[in-house]
Length: 355
Image (tube, rainbow, N blue to C red; front, side, top):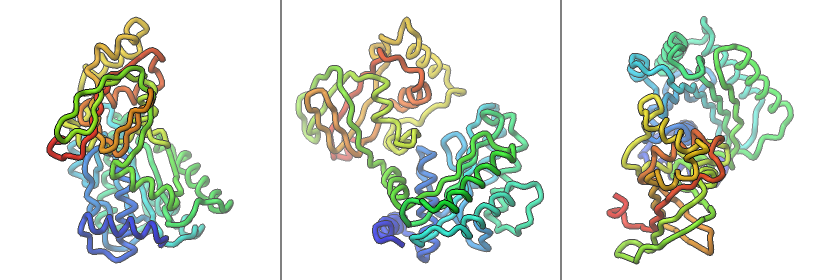
């Protein structure tokens, strides 16, 4: 295992007090880093791996409506509700501690996935993977309650090696993606070869350790007070805010920045308010007033710098405005240039103030 990756894995082990051998620990680390990309909530790495025969899949779980689902009872509860637009993603992970890429290992992963999703699998599965298959069958039987009419699928093949460049392995990766698309079971199919640099980014992202820089249209500072180094109320472009603060370099929402938020996001199906927010945001008659009509967003950060009209923040958390942030992200392609947003930015390291 690469030395830097190994150091991060050891930090992960210590944080969760895991007693696993190196191979299993790396499997848990990779599954955790990937799972955190899909949820606001805490993730228990013990629920992402299993003991028993390994058919070529180290971890399998579901991301449903921003939750990580690993048990049939959790899935049944979701599909027993009246919600008819559930966002469902099936995630497979295969992890190797080696610093190289092996086509044979990727081929085994590919065959295991195709067997898993077949109606008549040939593998004998562990109890854990057997339950994941039951959940898959439940999803397929309830596609009428799934967004876009079919679930999505992501397959991650992970090593601690450098970026994948070998043509034969790239071809095998693309072949698996094509087979999954041809199966007709999924709306969106992704096969990802995750190298050490990307894996480290995933781990850092799971800690909420992001940096952002964005242009400020107008600003006012608050007086200094105990425990607060700097604080500002600023007006920003809504479109720029989404790109700089909410969106990661893969075009996904930075979910870990909401870990300290007072409330979770209420989905569009569950709140008519969201539709009203979108309406006022994208309507030509009201978009220029969005920053005035909306209550805005509050961000805390241990490192805040305002230089001229550029704001810099690091390791930040959105503690109020989760709803507005999610609506902005969902509507990001339709945000008019004149839409603005009010943001309160507070520099503090005092956990009592954060709470």
